[in-house]
Image 1: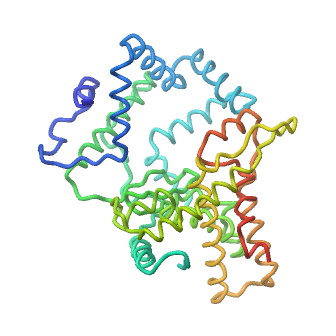
Image 2: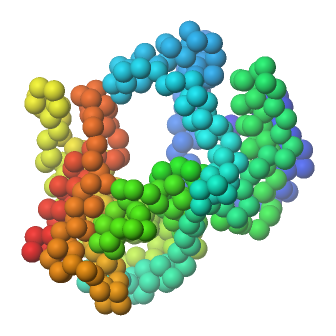
Image 3: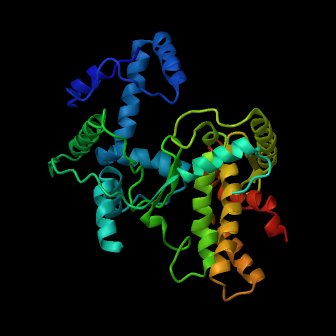
Length: 381
């Protein structure tokens, strides 16, 4: 079996007293990872493993080493893969690095300064779904108890060692949580433009910095906000009931709470999504040549969430109008809603990045709009 304790101690991490007794349970989300790692270690030579580890270490550290390493990394990844024209100015690089390394600390500064119905489910499964929704936790803005690193001391002459010190503090902090009551933890800092759903906690997190144009503004009409940030939040909620979320109950435990009939119905509908998106052809933005097709199976969970999110947000928008009528006609408001949704996925790609996107679980922005709207009865009106 893989032993990490000796590695942690060898690299300066304080693990004494952090682990529980021998009867403590340890949870794993993917046991096959360890099985496959054992196979890899068994059939790979020590020299090959050493080469792999050395490369991974250098690659992961390249942005924090000498200019030669940084430039080589940028030339391949940012320039060749993503089509960047020039390296980031030093001040922006430092800002991004601070945001990544000391996210809670920077996020706290940001906050201080800037601030159902489904007819295909049977009754028992629907009741369980409603129970799960009632337990859904939503975190908005930033954490109440951010990690502010009171014991951290940095050296202005040793940048790479500073990052290592931050990593040590983070690991020590996490190890000390063992045996403590579970608290909902932020996985994104407040300044990050993102939102996500965590199935093991049954929570959605909406950092403060995603609440900005074009997704949200307090001067926008409600149609714009519901079409923008509303569809994003609906997307994350829908993840609780997609091909992964459906395995977790309202308490975040793996629990078979769907009936066999509902599972069969879900699989039929999911296959329709998979087939639909697999027919989308991705073409070169430069020549019009075909680069490939969307992988409908790989992108299934995101496509389900996009479709469910838009539908949920549209319903919420019309519920809102019952209490707060719009200045626009219903038709105009609906058009504004859908325009706001589509605008949120405006994007620009190089051919290389488009080709790379075909290997990922998120389809290119264009197909997140067209694929979803093809399935929307309200849009078709």
